[in-house]
Amino acid sequence: MLRFLNVLAIAALIGSATWAYSVKYDTIYYVEQIRKKEAKIERERDAIAILKAEWQFMTKPGRLQALSDKHLTLQPTKASQIIRANELPDRKNQGDAIAEKLEDLGLVTGSTPNQGLKSSGRTPGSSPSVTGTAGGKTR
Image 1 (cartoon, one colour):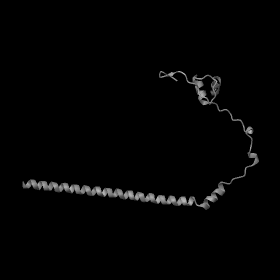
Image 2 (tube, one colour):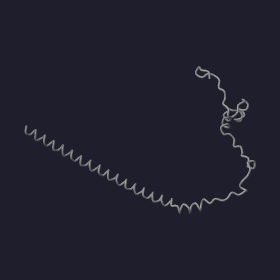
Image 3 (cartoon, rainbow, N blue to C red):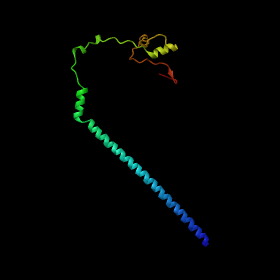
Image 4 (cartoon, rainbow, N blue to C red):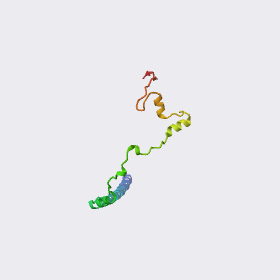
């Protein structure tokens, strides 16, 4: 019986020592992680302080005034810059790429988008009347 208690005591001692070492090393690991996070936070605070100083320099009123004087000089409008709408050059027709592709596929035969609307009596802003059945219901 005495040997059994001795073996049990030695096993408990080894188990508690193992547990104590694992707690110790876990604590060391977490303390190191906290130190790394604190160092990263400090670097970010330094970067923020630098950015604030740069922002204060960039938005200094004297500097902004000098830059605006240099780059934002407004010239009075000259009479030669003003023209009538009918004096504007005509825009060249760039065509309708989608209609051209549909014609190439043979789905549409040489009609412009507005021709179909004019021939049906509709205008571009009006909506077509829909008739027929959908799902057994008349629209």
